[in-house]
Length: 344
Image (cartoon, rainbow, N blue to C red):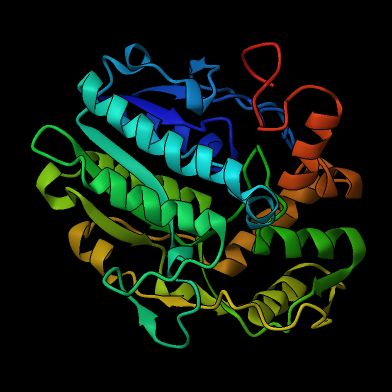
């Protein structure tokens, strides 16, 4: 298939593009370049990429593709809280517009990167795709809205699938430090302390970036009737863990690291455990290969081998400070558009 991956120069896209390419697909990217420079280690080799803001995509740019994998988003809860209107504009409005244009262009498959955070505060019970959605942040709200609006576009010629990813972790050449496992390993490596600012009790479903990529590939290659207009949780029950449990794993992996749970932010209301049986039944050959310990070990090696610094971890690899630095440098405007055209 000829496949367009939006956000291919992001944390997940940089991992996913080579996996889909290696499976024999003709992969192209579309990315405004906001995070193209957020590289730890050798510069990754990107697929041919259209340097276009998601809000400016045209139908002509989508013609000839068999599938769109839509990853691009402002994917950070603090950023969403700071600028909910921009999150709505990019994550909701531009995503639905992309789907409509893709349908108009004759694209038959549309794979949307949603999130398990649509479940919000779900308590101790394992939530399935049939659970009542309870998004607690502008980011999660935008995902619910896109699922609803894009599902309404489905017909025999346009087949969307909604992949509700658990919280991602794992090394990517374009690193993110503001997701829980990646952050706690970085804290341990750079300070010797696994610092938890909540009380450690919230549950988090986790999934490695490579496992997300393989799930998208499996859906892409599945018979259309198996995945048509369906939502799938992406992850494994084994990786439903509390933040305190993650901290203990990290401390065990990083030599001499200790755990400090301050509780200064109290209990995080975003606490939920997720059931992943639907995707296993639909795609029985799909495996989840990474658990939290193996991912923490990978991150530890990657951080040490790449010479991660505290400044880069806090600035270049954390979404909100990085975007603020681009604004201060006059490289993007106040609604996150690159200035001067093309990539930031």
